[in-house]
Every structure is written in structure tokens, then in C-alpha cells.
Length: 295
Ligand code: NAD
Image (cartoon, rainbow, N blue to C red; front, side):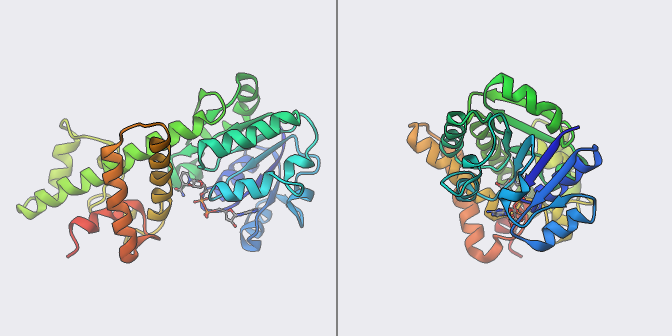
């Protein structure tokens, strides 16, 4: 079992740290939110007053932060953790951020002999709670192999996508496809219902036909068709529209830099921006259904 410090105990990080505790690891947690820290301490985690104190003695540091600027603030600069961590401390950043930012942090870590991998996740809050996340890693094989047994306490599928930053690229490709699938599924359901079809019957038909996809199988966007999904609780919880927009923005910026054409991703991004602009940013991303069926 390892001595691990977990930084960023939000919707995802909280349950991930909890699963590390359940697996028997010695876990110290840190977050700017005292409530988030208290929840993990009540499950047996240790804590400290600052991030620097929290990582003292850690063999491995894992972070799960909202965006690139938070990751840079935690790791870089004179005050950042990289300036103080002992050589050889394994660092895993699971935040979804730009691949350039991941690469830059990885390079600065390498210069200090600190092995670093980017390890963004897929699977949402449900996957985090169930310890069933997919980790999509970028970095060298030796670091990946060191991190894998730790990640296995939080996930079921652990992939090495390639060099540093590759995890972030694979993650935004996946989320761009997910946005396209969710918008397309919502559109098809809205068309069927406009023609008098029952959304549950239509969903079942499409699930068993060539339009079958992840949204239909386990995350139906039409309210009441599937139990236990955000659509059946007014789109509360889950993966926020604002976070999907962040990921679509990362995909778009990357495509522009690399002269890659992403017409479907760009359209999905516009739809999600429009939806967020109508006050839906804090709802689950399957609420894009409401853009097609405002009534
Ligand atoms: P969140 O906003 O719920 O949690 C982020 C946590 O980081 C908060 O508790 C915040 O207080 C803490 N934090 C921010 N700055 C900090 C700092 N300097 N030091 C310590 N703690 C700090 O976000 P989330 O939903 O848990 O998502 C985290 C990351 O995972 C994001 O990059 C997101 O895109 C990605 N992600 C989220 C989901 C999802 O379904 N929510 C799914 C896959 C990936």
C-alpha cells in the first residue's frame, strides 16, 4: 500500500480519494474547500493546513483540479509543489486540461527528477463512485507502470495513450465524440416525439439498431426513459454543461493549432455554448435535449 496525497476533492476527486482509502492506502487530502476535506477526514483520511504540508512524506501525489490554471498554480513557480517535492515522488494529474499545459508541467517535473503522468478520466461521477473510471494516461512507460496499481483502486480500464500530453489528447477526442453523440441522440429523439412516437419505444428501437450508442445505452437524455440518470432528476448532478464546454473548447483550440478540421465538434460546441448561454451551464450535459424540446 502506498502513501498518497490527493489534491482536489470535488465531484470526481472526492469519491476517487475515498476509493483509495477503501483499498487500504495511507491517504492525506487537501482542498481549498474545508467541507470537502472534512468529508474525507470522516472516512479516515489525514489532512494538513497547506498543500506543501499535505505532500510531506508522500510517495505519490494525485491531483484532480478544474482547469489548467489550477494545475499550474498547484505545481509551478517558487511556491508550487514541484519546487519542494523530493526527487522520485510520483505525480499523477487527472484533471482534464490542455495537452500543452500537461506537457509543460511534465517537462518541469522531469527537470527535477519527478516522474509525472497526465491521467484524465472518463466515466463521470458514477464511475468515480463505483471505482470504475477509465484512466487515459500520457507519459513514459516506467512512470505509467508505477502509477497503474494505484489507479486500479479507482478505475477499471487504465490506458497508456502515448507520450506526455497524449492522455489529454485522447480525452478531448473522446469528449468531443460524446458531445456529438449526445446532441445527435437528443435531436433524433425530438424528431421522433414530434411525430408522435413514444421516446422510450424509439430509444429501444435505436439501441438495437445502427444508431445505438453510449448515450442511448446508459445515459438517455429524455426525461423518464431511464431511471437513475440526470434526465430523470431535472438534469441535476452528472457532468456539467460548463465542463463539457471547457473540453469542447480544448478540442477546438487544439484543432486550430494543428490545422485539423472538426466540423461536427464545432457544431456541437456551438450548440452547447448556446445551451449554456440560456442559463443551463450548471446542468448535466444531457440537458442539451431541452435545446431541441424547449416545451
Ligand atoms: P469540481 O469543481 O467538482 O472539483 C474541483 C475541486 O478542486 C474543488 O473541490 C476545488 O475546491 C478544488 N481546488 C481548486 N483549486 C484548488 C487548489 N489550488 N488547491 C486545492 N484544491 C483546489 O470538479 P470535478 O467535477 O471534480 O472535475 C475535476 C476535473 O475532472 C476537471 O478537469 C473535469 O473536467 C474533469 N472531469 C470531470 C468529470 C465529471 O463528470 N465531473 C468527468 C471526467 C473528468
